[in-house]
Image (cartoon, rainbow, N blue to C red; front, side, top):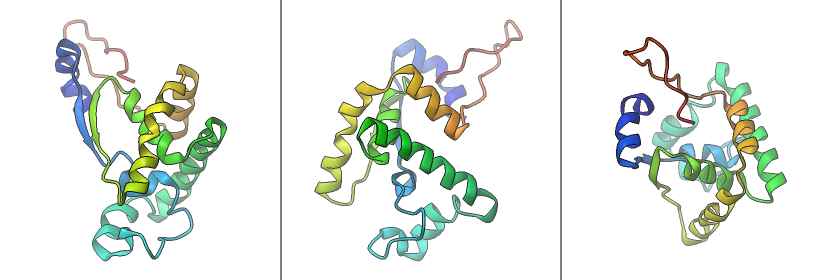
Length: 154
């Protein structure tokens, strides 16, 4: 995983990676909770296969819908959108230097840029709530010198 393999470089040079699709193709916005909106680019067969289907398989659908609803609850409490919260969470990662957000239009871009302000609201407690909702923290790398593990990166 990139989190493990590049962590020493990120630490040494105080740099991070560029991430692609921090909103998981729009999935983290919550717009796909019920169905694919007709106006969405994801309504095309290729985008559906790439961005919708992997999250909405029978074994993942219930869990992922609960995750998005949990993210939305935190966003509502912060008076922002789920998309802004997801992007703000990305900005808080010390392992991310930039994110390719790919907004569909300037209105969405302006909306998403509010994440810069939302990131200032993310306390360690809020970040921990997000971690508990998604439960996808990468396993820490093994310290081969000591046999222990390094602390989690996030």
